[in-house]
Image (cartoon, one colour):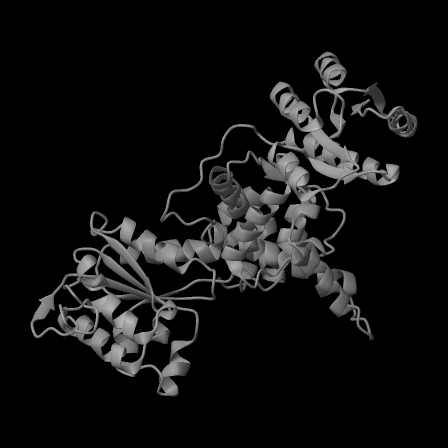
Length: 473
């Protein structure tokens, strides 16, 4: 039975809470001042404390500080007749779980208590050991798509050719560039990143190539550009597609000759820089329209990496969530340990138009909102919170898979229903299962049969009947 401590100087308020919450199955203690409330808190270590701000003697804010010092895991819900911004902000800063005003709606208070209890119980399910976020330059994800990315990165670390990274906004293009640099022979050199789309054309030119004294009004001294600063290392040009035609010509010269001139300069500056460019638009379309130079495009793209959007690699969401929880816990100085099942279900259902960056920001936002060590659906941004994921999952089930299967079945049920409906669905699932397992074991049927816990003969018959392999193979 959960214990609730009510600290309020109004006897009728204490009585009302005691009557209502006892009837709801809670064990309730009451105190009319902070001093007595602190004594009861030490004796009974309640799960939740309802604490009035306006108290005789020690006020509620001071009592809150002492309670959080004495029982840091106990959730405290503040109650006041004066809901000023100052007291609300201060109470939250001191660690209050929530804040309600008088006269309290008993049913609404009970809902807040239940949320606090639920969050605390969920928090105990997560390992309290600190999780260390991955270092900069380390990508997160074990999906087949990311495995191919890792292979490409490995190949690119053994040479210094230019690389073009393509992908939607927020997919992690700069992380890929950092990973190439950090694992290459240039790892001891500088990694310089420039967002070409964030600077006006004239400023971008001076940022990239530097300038000589007197090159323009205000140039009172010479300044090296990003190309010089990246000498011996890697220069990452994000949103390279936004470069003007004039800048494209200068960049082409650098790629061809490894030299350039500063603004206002006459002498060539020789550099040794690897260039990695990134774009979130289709450069071939810009080339056909004449906006982007074709010769520069092929110079930048001796090899390219296309990052998949997060909606196409949702199996990577759980490890990404774990990583961002650890990262944001340090950044925000909070101790959030995990997310509730309902949160992960919504993460897996959402399409993430902003990709990995949007996921990170959603977790940051939720961590700011939560008053416990676990994120609940109510803490999520509205567009994610309002999703209606599958309520029940089969043991070990996957929400994304279940949704896709449900949609597939619903399409088959369109009038008129297909013949052999049941067998068609079973064969479809079996085919995906067998193909995935064979890919995982690189076509080794002995390993596949062992993994599936069936005989090789049974496996082969299934492969042939489902046309996964031909009989003569």
